[in-house]
Structure formats: structure tokens, C-alpha cells
Length: 484
Ligand SMILES: Cc1cc2nc3c(=O)[nH]c(=O)nc-3n(C[C@H](O)[C@H](O)[C@H](O)COP(=O)(O)OP(=O)(O)OC[C@H]3O[C@@H](n4cnc5c(N)ncnc54)[C@H](O)[C@@H]3O)c2cc1C
Image 1 (cartoon, rainbow, N blue to C red):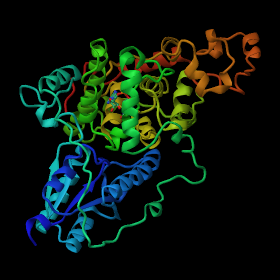
Image 2 (image 1 turned 180 degrees about the horizontal axis):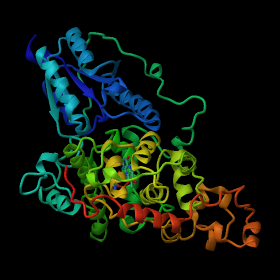
Image 3 (image 1 turned 120 degrees about the vertical axis):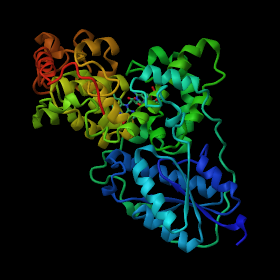
Image 4 (image 1 turned 90 degrees about the vertical axis):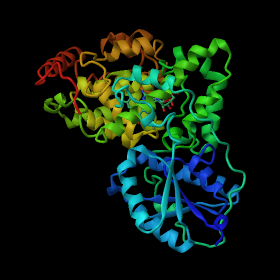
């Protein structure tokens, strides 16, 4: 076969897009037909378990990708199995000699093994940089190590220059006449059935590239100009809502970065702030590469002896949004309803679980992983460790969020609480974040019977705070320098 007719495989993973997809672009440059594949790998492969909310997202995202590929004259092949077996088998059927992928840093080790297996069968794997702003090895300390603190990381990332220019989507993808087996997406059973707990998701989410593009355009048109101030107010929803699209690779961070170029000068502070948040994602990935057990082990090993408690009833109350602290409950119910929670409220709910209930951060990380549509192996684990104080660049242990004060500061009118905790809808603003302090006549007027319509607090925050501080101080090595 002349070189230009040799087909190649583009293996889609968490890069479910045609736009700015370096692996797809490189495969097209060979001039041969391209076979786009998505492999449903067994969960036990330890390549990042997929949560329930993400399975919903994946179903719709793959549907959208298949549609885009069809419009470009191609199609998506779906196969279940161990990646190396699937790829070898498909390559044998189709005469493929090369597999193109975008690097997925969370599965670096697994991918190395797969590439070796393929090499033994004369199939080369070519990997590309498309998922982060910069390649992690390009952002290192002077001594060539990974940064452990965000600010110097951010400075180095800025010094490295602009991320690469994004590449537009191909209009036509050459395909092969050979027909190979593809499974039906419906047979994968990714969607919830009874009950359909994802029924509320489509109100804010459209998985796929089109949905990502719309979110980006809306953010730039309406929200970016006030991002720095608005991003902390959960009722305003001034953030981009791009996280699930980024997590599934439906849009590249380089595309987002460059879309914020050319904003009016008055917006420059907001642009910098937004880009800084995007850089947090890169930072979390650099931590994950340095410490692949980020979701399982304390970065700071002085936390290994920490005495966590666990009360199943309290954990359940937290998951259901029935703690008696309105801002915590609003956040946890937003999570149920939309598979998403505002960043400020993620910090408050995580702090409540870890410090007020003294429950191990890993239990919270798992719950978020199962329920967030944007659940991300690096961002989720790094942020939970940040709140716990056990992370690399962590919030100090004595920073214990007061759920009432946080509510009053960031949801001053109580709109966020009213939206997600409707039984408090008629409560006076003065008590919206502390119904337990409201006089009986105020509660009666709002139609609230504490302990029935809405729970009393499951813990007293003041006492819980003292308990947490005492436990943190009792760690074996309180001054704890972090070592890997
Ligand atoms: C306990 C906890 C768990 C979290 N779990 C996840 C998770 O699983 N997946 C996830 O994407 N984010 C996670 N975050 C970070 C953050 O809450 C979300 O990225 C953000 O709320 C997404 O909304 P947005 O896209 O509108 O953000 P924007 O404010 O518009 O930010 C743009 C992008 O920057 C990135 N980003 C923003 N903040 C952070 C951050 N603190 N750390 C890393 N990247 C960030 C995200 O990719 C985000 O989409 C977590 C935060 C906490 C405190």
C-alpha cells in the first residue's frame, strides 16, 4: 500500500472533540484514512473510575462526537475491552500501523504499558499535547522539579509564553471502506433508568463540542467582564461552566485561553483572573503526575495518623443536603439536581464534611467523583486535599469555614439557598443562613417547623470547630514538612 493510503487509528479518550485536536490533526496529515475509535475499558484497569453523573455525560458526549464525525464523512467505532487487545485486533483487521492519541496524564503509566504492547506488534503510538495549557515537563522549578505551590507555578506558566495556537476542526476526514464491528452505544447502559436522577441535567448542560462552544461564547459575552468579583457569588453564576466540557475534552484549554484575547482593556483584570483559574487545572495535573496516588494518599504524610471519625448518619445527611446548615444543604442539593456545585460552595461543603463532621476527605472525594459531571481525577483530588490541609499547596488546617458566615458573605440575600432549599423560601433574610436562631414567630410566619420541614443542625459548629482544631493539633508532627 502506498504510504498515503495506510489507515491510522485515532483513539479518543477524554478529548471528545474535532476542534483543536492535535492527535486527529496529525493522523490526517499522514494522508491516509482515519479510523476514530472510543474504547470502553474495564473499570478494574485503574484508569480513573467513571462516576454515575459522568456516565450520563459520556453517553451524550459520544453521541455528539459521532454526529460531528458523520458530518465530516467519518464515523465513530465503539468497542469494549482491554485497550491493547482492542487496538491490536482493529489494527490487524484494517492494516493500521499507527495509533494517534492525545496525552492523558492521569493514565500515564497505563498508557506506557499499552504502547509497549503495541510496539511488540509493530504498531506505533504517537502521543500529542492537547489537554493542558502547557506540557507539565515544561513548567518546572529551577532544579527541574514539579512546583508544589501554585503562585510560582503560575508565574512560570506565564513566563513560558502563550499556549500553542489552536487548530481548527477538519471539514472532511478520509475514511476507510473496510467495515469493522462497532458496538451500539445504547448497549453500554450509561444512562440512569429508574429513577432517572439526571432528569434535571439538560436544563443547564448540553454535552459535546457545540455545548462547550456555546458556554464559552456566553461566558465571554456576558460574564467575563465581572468574573473576578462575580465568581465567588453562587447565586449569580458568573463562572464559565466549562468544567465538564474540559473534563471530557470537548474543548481545549488552549482554545479557551486564546478566546479571551482581544478583550477590552477594562476586562484585563478579569481575563488574568480567569486564566489563573485555568492554570489551577494545569497545576492539579502536575501534582497528579508527581504523586499518582493523589486521590488515595495524603500528600502530606503527617496526616496519615490523623484520627478521622465516621458517623454513617451524618455522612448521609451531608450527601442528601440535610445538615441543618442552609448553605451546605443548598450546595449538596445543587449537586443532586445538576451534577454540579459552585466552587465557593464546594469549599464550604468539603470543609463541613472534613472539619465539622471529621470525616476523611477521601469519602467526600469519592462522593463528588460519583455525582459531579465535571469529576476530574486531578482537580477533584487536589482540591479535596487542599481543603483538608493535607495537600501540596493546602489551606492551613486552622482555616475552618463557618457555614453561617460564609453564607452571609457570599449569598447575602439568600437567593442561592432559596433556589435549592425551597422549604426555606419564605424565611426572613436575617435568618436564611441560621434558621436555628430564628424566633418561633419568624419560623411560623415562614411556615417552617424545625426538625420536620427542615432539620436542626446535625452538629454545633462551634463545638465541632474546637474538636477539629484539637485533632489537627494532635497530629504526630504538627509542623509537618511535606515529603513525597
Ligand atoms: C472540593 C472541591 C472539589 C472539586 N472538584 C473538581 C472536579 O472534580 N473537577 C473540576 O473540574 N473542578 C473541581 N473543583 C474546582 C472548581 O470548583 C471547578 O473547576 C469549578 O467550580 C468549575 O466551574 P467553572 O467551569 O464555571 O469554573 P470557572 O471559574 O469558569 O473556571 C474555569 C476553569 O478553570 C478550572 N478551575 C477553576 N477553579 C479550579 C480549581 N480550584 N482547581 C482546578 N481547576 C480549576 C476548571 O477547569 C474550570 O472549568 C473542585 C473544587 C473543590 C473545592
